[in-house]
Length: 242
Image (cartoon, rainbow, N blue to C red; front, top):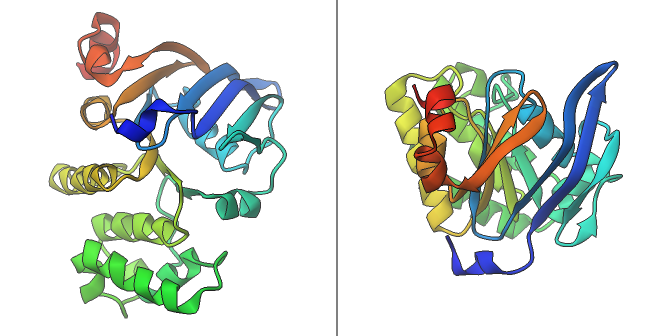
């Protein structure tokens, strides 16, 4: 864990409950992420993992509870305000602007910024981080492979210079070799100091890369702790690690 990770939590979620009609998607969920950490949420499909991320990025309404970022209550904030405050989400399924180029998608990622020269420098920084994207900068995003689209989704989110990166199922639909490459990228981001909250179906990979983990079952947190402990927890091994 980073030395930065010892202070006040960058993100604190307290007693968060979310409903979709009569369905209780999350029930009194509390978690925190400290600066410099990678924290992962694991659980079965439908457990509420993606809902938790969408609540933090403020794209779903909160029934009760609070979300604080840098000790500021963002429970009632708009999604665009959340991005300006320093939270960026890489959504499940990537959601590229398929008919726009790789370069156009990166420019879009900086829509909350007005520092043109710095934006251009960050575009080149992302091309340095993702050489495959540099080779395809003028290619339409919809023609990229799944792995390349995932790289672009991450690079686009980084263009807002987030303090917190929310990653929703980055391995979804990708071949195992490509998944390993994406997780190498996540590891590099961790080493460079990017704080990450990761939702991932591949529990073993997620626990191997994260500092701490939370297990969601049917909308409730059931287990939490250092990832190294959860990797050896018999309940987690039986339910999620095979």
